[in-house]
Length: 344
Image 1 (cartoon, rainbow, N blue to C red):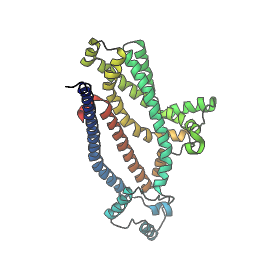
Image 2 (image 1 turned 90 degrees about the vertical axis):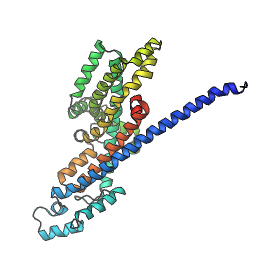
Image 3 (image 1 turned 180 degrees about the horizontal axis):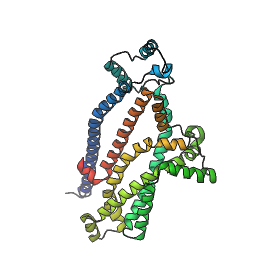
Image 4 (image 1 turned 120 degrees about the vertical axis):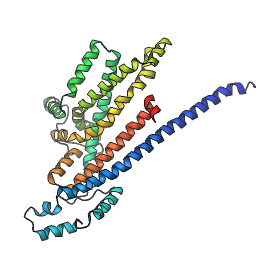
């Protein structure tokens, strides 16, 4: 081997290792995507069919909403024919599903407005609050869970455990009322109600209006993430690979970030896959307290009014949100945690 070839050999080996890791990473991501699509397609078909069938099972009609309970059978038949409800069930489902694939969720029975537009307006509000609540929950939950794990069996661990236990049993509407009373009415630091989009009032106004509802919704996320992370980190510290790292003389910081944290992230990240859809769904009470016209409030109002197409649109969007967020969580798990990598 010549002098020029000797230094090139390690570089070639490093390049080969990097290419192999890249192929493995791409393979894991594609595997997660393939499995998610294989699950999503049949679930989506079944749930959309069941969702559409609810219209027939409910016995509700736009004629009852528009004409009242005393409408004559002839008037009811005329209105239902205008909405296409006199056609066979499968023909109605086919048209609705075709529109669904093009992003069209139908027309509201109550006001004739486009349901996609109505849901889009409310969804922007709810997603802003839910995402901010998730960020708060992840940051605070990870900080508390890590602190408790690093100071396990000490008074700090017991204090953190007691604190997150109290947070987990506090309903969001109670927290919201307290936050409005103290920080909006009492101190005047935040607005007590309403919503201002970022493009209309700037990022500052947008954050000011979503901070209190996001904090109210984040308590449950903080508690679950902190408890899951604390338990998984403590379990990781008991593994043989940590003992081996200590014997090799690695620093506590390197042991934590290289071995313990990466192996203990799985349960906490998996918790987020369930929490985000729950945040969007649980926002209805919080939206009433803070005067927000969000997705949850729109769903509640639609159900109360008997607006079946709007309720169907809410269910479809909820399904998509659940699947999409769980796909993101699975991709992160496949990339970050070794345990999930082995499962791909």
